[in-house]
Image (cartoon, rainbow, N blue to C red; front, side, top):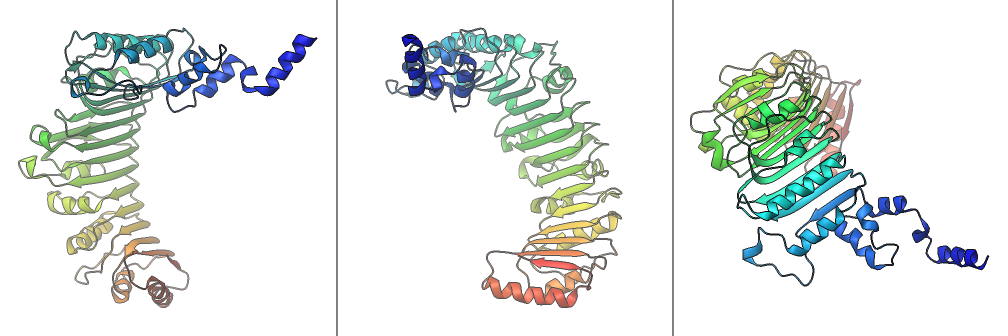
Length: 440
């Protein structure tokens, strides 16, 4: 009886320690890093090995002990204490849900640290990991372990950053992978599409970023991907990547940021619903760009977003003209402050017979020499307006089917309160009585 009372009193004093190991390990998994979880081992004997039971691991070799110093010679090497810590963390056999690994390794192919990293990844893959976030710094060629590319449980995979990836095993089989993020990775020719993506039969979301690095992937093909985000910013590689191809018959959402190229060899986007384009000119692109085929491949979209710089690119480099956008109902675009921006808007209105919602950013005046064609726009939202009231009135007269107008004035406008009042009066006097309006 006394022993039970003592145990109850101990639980009252330390109620957390009385929780089951499974609950405690789940709590430790919520900490930002596994190293923080490991610091609880000094609390008592009960807590000594609890951190090895966490199922979400966040491991980063940049978290150094106070006794360790960083020198230029160890920039791409992790210390022995880091190896010992990871080995201890992975010493158990319980299932792992997620591993986030950030580390540096030596550039030599036979470097023992590379073998360590491969062993850690294989360990976690063998324990049924569902999510892997691998950010490996390697100045040489890095070979990921074959077991990674044969995981039956992996659902989300991230590989990066600025990594020269060695040949991928030809028999990639990732039957559960739905989300893939490639962050500035060099692939051997054809390995991305023909090997990696080909081995992902249920992949739905793909992100490919490439910044200031060689060998920009210039072909993206998948029979299953529904959402794609491509952000390229590699001026050093533009000469070698003068074309781009998209073969994604089930894609419904595309976000594409890249310099305008001279050729888009294949653009198969039959199911595309929404596209966000950020195309910009680049003097390193060699021959004059031509985005005609890219825009033509997006003709089925319902929603289209154009960045301000994209407006100029399409105006100058869509050499064969715009297609008819038979499904387009929402258009968002910037760069209307120039005459060419107004001209492109007029052209888009002409080529979009079902357009109902128009969002315009940075409308700075309206060029009266550009008239808008008859259109069915019902919802008009103008962002960052800093033109005159007369220019706004002239612009609104181009739209005869409006039922809602929202006007956001730029913060740079002096006496914004009075400006809002003036614009409210203008809208009230200029718009049909059935049209609602708001100024913010």
